Length: 580
Ligand code: SF4
Ligand code: SF4
Ligand code: SF4
Image (tube, rainbow, N blue to C red; front, side):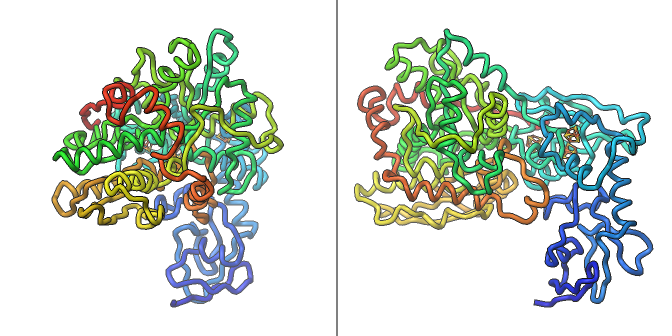
């Protein structure tokens, strides 16, 4: 590898040719602060927080985009540099609604943290006229408060470049610049897919999910309601980050204990209904393969992906599995099978989900998601909202004991837990579909070709005399590429898994927000995914069709996968939407 020698703060550093100053400094264990920079997504050198002094240069340079050259001498901490950063922050904060005490991001806001580190004091602001701002709460899943926006454009870059959607951008010019949608439309009027990836990358409190923590706490306090909760697999892999645990820590036991202490009447696991999804989806897949149905069959667990398909590939909605997502299947079973077992009326059950996802807030309000005459799921909270709820009720998360889920909707297999990462649904479905087709036990349950964090993965498996071709995509930009190859005939598959968020639910828009320097240097997705693969490995039952609680559900209530009752409760329909 060609390398270049530079001096940073007097220390000699050897860095690969093509490195930026920011990258070279990291090799010397110097972290230059950034705000707008997101590696390979938003490399625009706009916020000027990362400025450094380069000997011979006429002005300070933005280290995130400035390439090193042989012999370059750089100062990252001179008085001139620190003064410039402080002034930039003062200017940003002068045009900012400084409400840290009540702000949802207080404590993990990158702007607040920098102000603290650089010693920007209250009396240093240039208070005068502020950019006119407004609050956009037109979308079901999120709120934009431009009075806390620093115009870093991380959100617009992720929406456009990663998700390939681009429903947000900069409106107006200069002092009047704000982030919003074209023609000042509310986000809810656009073809935003509710993925929340913009919220996940926002460094400040300008973007947040629409929270329903208070509504859930009010339901819990209502003695006439039976309030149950389900938690998606990816939540246990990330919730700990909110309480200081390292990225990649499984906090399933403490999470169950916390939910019980918050006051839920039943603490259940979405893994149960992920297994149920596999039973229905594998049946649907085999039915389409054997009876000439529409192929490729495409998974339907990810509501961000579903909304994307409806807006941007409406001619492919017939390819979507008619299976409801695990969240919705859980709700439908809770208000029928569980309600009957417990002697409860469906309308007296309040069904809450904890999800890594903001699109789930959209999904619970979709048509055809109320199998028992009441919504399958009443409230969907993100992982972040659960963390806030835990703090709000005064629980000390780190000292909680490890507890298990309640039965009968709390038992899930190893196949179910890997739903939370890209390739997991495919692997879980293959474990069941292959054994059903061949009638033989699989020698190995690990389908390694569909594992890993690549955006698009493909594999072919010989099964019972057939060559089953599968593909997996995560992130909607990758989904678009894959679907275009399918539509053009360049590729043919039998079965496709698509997740709306890059890396799958572990990197969902409702997961804990990590600051830019962590996002830029740590493989957060792989660390969180490793929690789920470990959990799969440790589970004594690793195939959905061997889940005893699911077997009992079919034997005593649903009949067979794909039965009329299963169809009524567990399947849904889609709409064709336009692009706005
Ligand atoms: S966005 Fe950050 S700096 Fe602004 S009010 Fe919220 S916590 Fe404070
Ligand atoms: S939620 Fe997703 S689609 Fe909507 S604006 Fe944010 S990134 Fe774009
Ligand atoms: S909303 Fe957040 S991510 Fe988007 S430009 Fe403003 S501060 Fe940056």
